[in-house]
Length: 201
Image 1 (cartoon, rainbow, N blue to C red):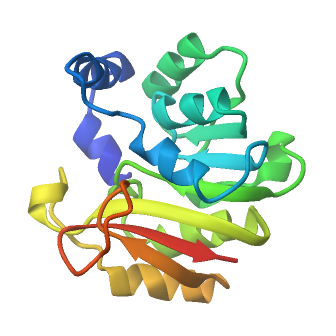
Image 2 (cartoon, helix red, strand yellow; image 1 turned 90 degrees about the vertical axis):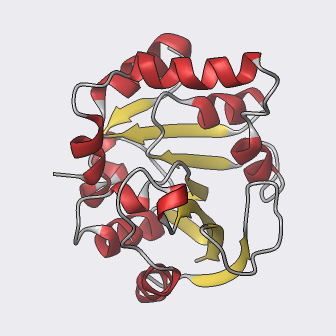
């Protein structure tokens, strides 16, 4: 059982989506992750949104001209994504067992993005396997981008994942650290409770 399943319980994708809709109405920029990714790969690049949730990041990237695929384990989240963008490919998948070929997704990805605390919310002990699966989905030279909290202020669950752990899993999966930031606005990382890491295959 993933930490997300424990946390979400019966919570619906509609509730989650409503929170971001309210933020957008208040004038907050809710597309920082998409803007960050768009600065890394050219328009038309193939992007996997790993843990896509209600599709906020992927839908924006598709609007910007990217070839996107979304995968998530939470059916209620995917129901919202499919309702908002029925023409985009959404798959219900456990990332620890993600195999693009089995879903009929041909070819590799130029960029895989895991936003929204995906790694800290995985089932304990599966993190390395998920990194391995996502790395295998990348084309040579492709990028894995992950943003997640490292302390209680930036996580809805007790912290347990360190950047050292994450870098070790990436290295074991054949990925090299390219850069690390403190925010999706690309502020330099100098320690702190949130990090956005960019690794290259």
